Length: 253
Image 1: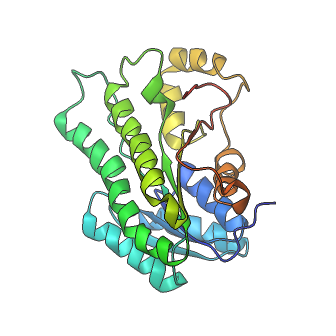
Image 2: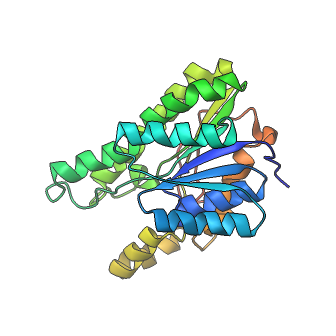
């Protein structure tokens, strides 16, 4: 079983969905977790689940599009738990729609909440990880960036592909300091995916047929536990890669 005892993790967008699943799995593996997002009540719900299982969690409300808020998230985490070993950049506003329908504001919000927020948090986390001899950063991308048909996914795919580039750069620049940086591209039973399925039933049916394992990933069991494993010393030689946690659908080669 994955052992992350003594590790400290910060997960953005952890009030529900994939972020919550990852937080629960990291805590189950022994890590202390700081869960962040915009809605304190949801974060407190995640923290309560962690605490009920015997873990330790800190809920920090904030806005990933605000630089000062990001700095506060890291500062509170380090003050409470004494350091930072794992950063999961999960929060993301999604600029969905065809190119002519996506507004500048929505596109910018996608970049501000995704790549820019991740860029800022990675730099904020860096000195704390370096001081502890290393750490792991996990960025979230999407197979939307390499879809066979990009219709309606161009803006979202562009935002998520930027995350992969940041991963590669940080892995190359920070590897000698023991900092590993990875990207995951999950299909999971998140509220966002459930909304998409409900509003695009025909496309969703076709989508499911392209998943070799024939199902969507479970938030904690499939996605969260995979992230916990990636953060462990057992996979300590893996960095700079995109791991498609999607039941075998995508090919990121």
